Length: 477
Image (cartoon, rainbow, N blue to C red; front, side):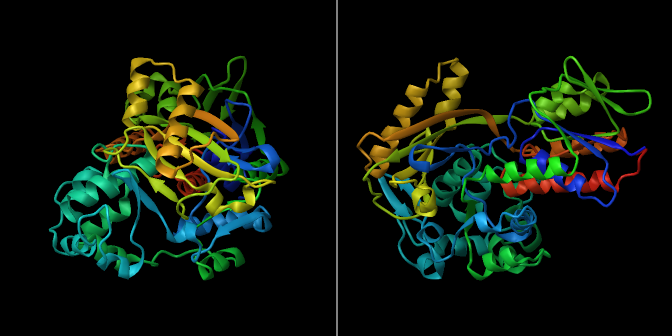
């Protein structure tokens, strides 16, 4: 009788793991268990008035690198090529990104020429930060905060404005707490290997082997910066759901897992409240802290390592305006914590994907709220009402973009604990978890955003790698 693999979590990581398991030459029996009634996790697209698309989570996927190429390959395998909306390299959303500092929008330098020109809010051309980076000595610590790393190599301005904002935009986190080794591994490795981040990135560019397809070739030729899907990014998990069902994968929705226990034969018993599943192997694609609460007593050291991986909340406020115009054209802008502790940034959705504006078209922007402002309110137990979050977002859009008229449509969603925080020493938590799994020979594989990347591409890759490990393991391992 074939093996049974139970996948916990129907977000994009769990869906990707199930997909790759189901496509094996001799696939195991796969059961995907999702606590909620819908699949896709944080990827969620909503159709508004006139057919406009509003993304409540991720809104664009980067095609760059091996991971970006593999995601495009998945898109092609699912028959979604005709649904892809690319942002080509010559498009304003690809070329222009902004920082909001000192009450004004500042374009970030692009291209070689931009490095030699004065570029407010920085006091001098970024060429000087690059020169400093080329001559800075290699760091000696096994890990370092993003702020410390950037300040040491690029100077205090780049650290407190650019890297602070980047950490807020990607992780909704604090650059003085996040780990450079885990959050930006390519930067950390470049310094370790080549002594200079710039030299390391230049020498390491394009070295990893990448898959190829017509869509991948098109993305390279047209220098796509990102892409979405015509009906919204949720089309991807929906297509995976259809594919998995056709391949015989059993999908259980609305079934929260209550606990995991190891039986005498080293198989898992997965408790689902009033029923249970037996599994030869479990792939966990739920958040690390959730898995930590499900593990049996004999896995207490693993549970401790997982519970130390925390996450932060983000409020996503989608706004649409009739007859309004943006003061600039680009992808969007980020806001450093020194400027506004609560507004992480604003994405100009209509610039990148005007095809999703609906009819008649209306200007769509998304305000991201979080940071110390939101954490303080949560810690106090404050009521985070939709009215409060909408008011904050509308004030930010009015102040930072001049959108002073009330929006014609507004959606407010508070995503609790949605972005894992790879704080200083995160790599040691992963090492402890990996060593425990290996030493105890537990038939458990970890996947998802809690471990090695929070972007959609990272999550899909974590699912692919989890499936590969399970398929490569012996039945009794």
